[in-house]
Image (cartoon, rainbow, N blue to C red):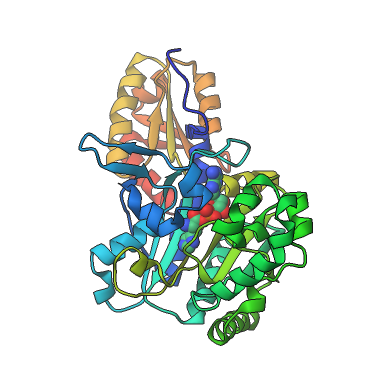
Length: 421
Ligand code: HAM
């Protein structure tokens, strides 16, 4: 073989893609119910969108971006996430002039040059939503509820929803100051990464999973200790909305997400049984992002969920990925004449909107029936020399096992009627 696929990427093979279709179908249903429209933005953007939007000092931008100069010597990056892209599209296309809020969803590949391990890939896929133009805490609660609804509709159990408030530009400097003064005498004991975070981005130290950092920052001031009045009121209101609909959540004062744009509400959803990469989704509010990228002020909030991790969690929990009837009819034929009739019939069936297949491998009749079973077809048509002589086909209902002789001229009508039942 000339070459294999690049590290950290996956082929989604025909046997697997049904799972993706199922998740996409459920995501589409939820988005319709919650009133979100789809948005599609480019897979690559100017690098500065992410360095400004996501943040220069984040791991994602600093270490994980696929960045290159194009032939016009512009610095281009494959999108490591889509929030900044959606916000760019909102500003560039003046969506702020539409009735607000603008509620959009997206699904597609993201690219991060991460250390590859189970659940951590270099090309991975997210389903996400963004709401722009409203600061109402009801939007925070709606977005969080929507993510949880999605998981529950897939049947996932044992999830933990962690929420926190990371404050705003008014109260964050106070937290930064208090945190730095608390950690000043402890810096030496932190891991290398957190030592470098101390002056650049000390809040991220609270999020470190290293034992020594956890221990040293155990009593450190959290963001919620330092919230200004507005931020505290906003957070209380979000919790109240969630309580009102009986949502289960854990207030996690150490939750500070890895992207710089967050303000106020931040949340993450963990699945306990998929190993180290337990975060199956996360999101939060980003009220300063439109301005950061040169647009007018507009608040925003959203989430992104990792499709590969969700599928892994569903597989671990033995959940079904119901496939919508892929193949309606399989035509098994025996002999050259019957094959010729089968070829004509399969063409007519497909034109009538029926998903149909014939044998393309010269299999025996028995092997064809076995093949049809594998597809879980609704009906199998059996056409041998004798049936052709009599201008009929034998139609077998694969569910009940019942067989019926149907004149060839009436097959399409008969099947359409049966399939509609
Ligand atoms: P994020 O936490 O970086 O947030 O990613 C969201 C989800 O994408 C994660 O919870 C995880 O399930 C999945 N994910 C992230 N990195 C990888 C990877 N290397 N391999 C596999 N799955 C991965 C964001 O991306 C924000 N844009 C979310 C957001 C939307 N915030 C506001 N709006």
